[in-house]
Length: 245
Image 1: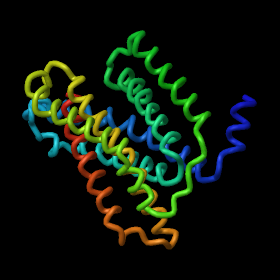
Image 2: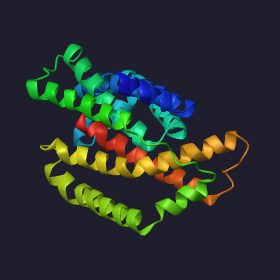
Image 3: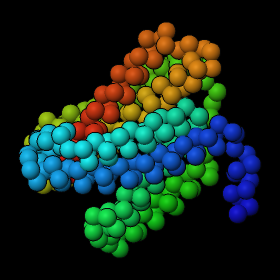
Image 4: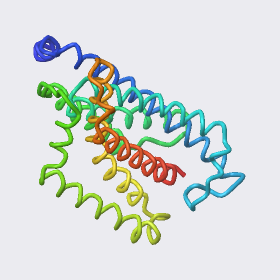
């Protein structure tokens, strides 16, 4: 408790806002998965399932309600990145896994086995450990500063590796194993998500600075980050729908 007290006292007001927004985001996103899955199941019963390339769920109101819930959660998550360091916000996303697991057990009657419970416990321990030791965020004065960091050789090399892995999964493994091994779809979503974190953080900073009077919409880097975020979100949404049915 003493460690938690010292940690909370050392947090800035922006970090606290980011923490609250991140937790709220996890609640909305965790619940949205359950609502969307019910919508996908309902749509799949009267049309072509999303898992085999169908898009009948786009006509299902329940899926759209889940989608709206997820959008609200993502907006909260987006805002959290504008206020708090990524190392503080990102681990809290694991809370949505726990919420989804519990709601799936209660609402969808999907049994939560011992390993599932252990996994949820490890998520809590890991997230708490990282959050308690999160460093203070570096002060950013312009979106171009984030661009400079994102174009350093180390991150460019990592991005190239991730994109290579994503395209390999999509064009080689998805056609052969997508229907039988959900880890293929999950792998695509996770890899793409690792790139989107940087772009979401950059876009959040850009909007925060713009609203404070320093217009960042004039910089082409802001729109480049926006394009990356949009591409990542569309890709993740497509393959998440395939995973849930």
